[in-house]
Image (tube, rainbow, N blue to C red):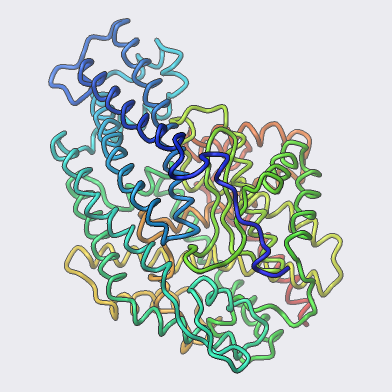
Length: 596
């Protein structure tokens, strides 16, 4: 399929256009309803109070009313924000969407301030009494308990309100600069003897090209482009991490404390996972050395990480990818197949790489049971894998469609559960029917992804941890950021990659550094947790199905260890993580056997 014929998503079913009366009315309604909610919270004294209110039926009524109103206005605001964010994601030059997003952000600050007031108010209440007295509170028990803990780490109400206001011109503004600026970077690369100017998304897609010399030229052009544009990106990194250091210190946290709290896991779980992953780095290096043999090179360079193997593997055009995914989802459950069929038929997917469109892939909940999926599709098994992954997120959104906004608040650790599980469904089916050459290509796609989520994610975690530590003393230069990234890659990839051809600008590539604190480890968690779940599915497929959907519904309503215990999995034990990593070790051995 020609890239220009790949599908674009349809946002008009949400709002006809940015200028449509429906959109203007929705934006105005968000503002009016937030204003009404502020008035309600003022009248009911929803804020930090020296003397908590009496535990009586009036308090229960107040809590239920406030929770219901917050859920309702949050959904309204989300739909408008998702529409604008998705419009910008495929066209960062969309000035009208950027302007309206700026307007909406002012309203979202007010909503965040209300949430902070609610947290402070709950910190002075007997949350367990409220949960026992109110069905609405009981339905939001986990969120209320988390809020009670978070309340102990709040600054004064005036300081929290000021921090929310300043974030618009602080961390949020720097993140906006990063997204807009990086999405518009273009650079030249020679392709078939002709110099072409490509956007960064298209340039990075050349990492998947079969021609090693072209991959090298694209890699060198990419590094040159990042170097030329590094100064404002480094400023954004320093500002965002500096702000986080300052705020977490004032609140009595560290940045990692906040990340663990937000991801519903504890230090014991994180350490068990990261320490066990390190045990398996030699296994991943074996895979990298086997891939080097397959490519007939002495040692892999960074630009070989995503190279296709010379095995005559199948071309997966978009239609073929769609049909195969539908078949495998249908083998799991009619509900999952129906969700994927809707996504393709109702144009939820934007697959074409193009100028102004952000790189990578994501799935965004749009409204009710609808999602939108951004991809930069490549006609190889990796492209199939990405679509299956993002459709898994859409299935997760479908499962939670009956939840309130607060109940939907799933941490990144568990947000990757359905996506990675769907990857496994599709991969196992592809392996079962593939010839040896195609098996090799599929295993390559699996191990390529696993190397990213285990080895590379660890390097990114090491990098971010060091940036936070050093940023406490001063700003870091682009050269220092490069050095920290290179050192982290050496520590994790070891002799699996040529040390002269690493990627010191990976800190500029990954947008997550500019929006989420310690975004990295949840991806490893999601990959390995899903492997554990998939093993349970293979043992008892019929019993698993009902439990699986119930798990997806509950991902915002309990901590990860409690949810894992439903399947007799102890995520605080290295033994659990070894079980998942052993599955990947078996794939490496199978890969080596096929390489010879």
